Length: 560
Image 1 (cartoon, rainbow, N blue to C red):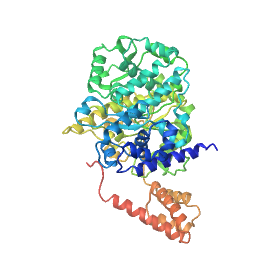
Image 2 (cartoon, helix red, strand yellow):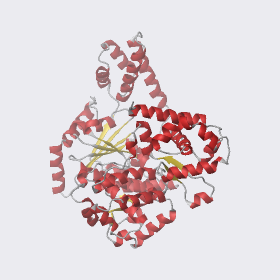
Image 3 (cartoon, rainbow, N blue to C red):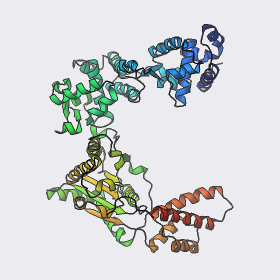
């Protein structure tokens, strides 16, 4: 009888579990290994490996499926702290590495001299083969085009970035992959550039960044991802700065801007794009994957009914009309004709829960615009100069997003209090960094083309320089009693008018608080079938109101 793949997977996983359990505190000699030949047979037969290799592989699989690292000392402890077993264990590890069942990390000479033991991870293809009971996961995919080859490279790259492979192993793997496909035109072009092994890998990584991430690349970040050695990274940076690096000598890259020292950004030259990318993959059609924010597509935004106070409603209606694609096109053309930048900078101000972020999302959904939402804490970094680089990258990513969207997207700085506040006298390095960020943002907004929106809780603390750079400034206040009743009626349509009016009189709730109460009510109603619905709702309102009151006893944020 031929077993189904699912049955094979269960058999393999049982063998892994049995091996991990039963070999604990055992002496791994030939006699003992012979006694467990049958329990190990699912693994040894499936992968065609020895008993010792099956034992070691099982331990690594068991640890990795549980997301636990397995170091050399843990292996010794597993077998009763018998260090004599280390020699046989290491032989098995070396054999599994040679077969590409395991990948090693942190195995450079400096680590070994410092007493650090190599660590290993199971090849993800091995893990997939076990989980699916299917050896075909180990089969090499047929590669006929350069894009297919790049997909294979892109599967290796995360293993280097996450520590699956040390840099030398990764370099060897990529160069082997190159030599296996000499008939692909683009591969021949790369081989004819005369680059060394390290340079070829770095160059291909640049191409991958262009294809799958962004057309501009931070070389510092990329080199940290690829190379363990600080000497390699320093040598690269020196070559880029003095113009001696082969990438510059051979016209493979160019600086993204004149400010290389600050930004470290480079991009592929037109010659490279012509030879490797061509017309097959257009930049505009590339899948955009931001690093500095979250991309929200309009189709993923739930259409939410929002209620505003009278003044806010008129302002939001005007903004919605302006963001209509046809009208926006006219607005931008008018601005260009007046020698102005075609951009809209919009600020939504107000306390927590007043609907600032929800309003942005609703506007995006209504006008079918994507949102690149950025949190300021993601921009800020403890490393000197990195925060400034991150902020510049945000605007670079937005410009890249504009190329891939049919309609102008929205760049949203959510809860931007920390960066929009009044500039302060520099007494600490963090003050200097915050002021530098504000100066960069001011310049970016001055030259901005597109739709920029920001939300803040601290309108009174807004720096005057930012105040004049926002065309629309909408203050979102707590809902009036009349508006609050509409929100309650919309969220709790099954409750009687008397109960909702009582809640409206007792509790000055924000729209976000009412939404929280609705979620809690849905959970409670699913658990307490017999409870009085009105009592539950009143209790939740009291609870939410008390939380807000206690939260606001002490001022949070900037004070004058």
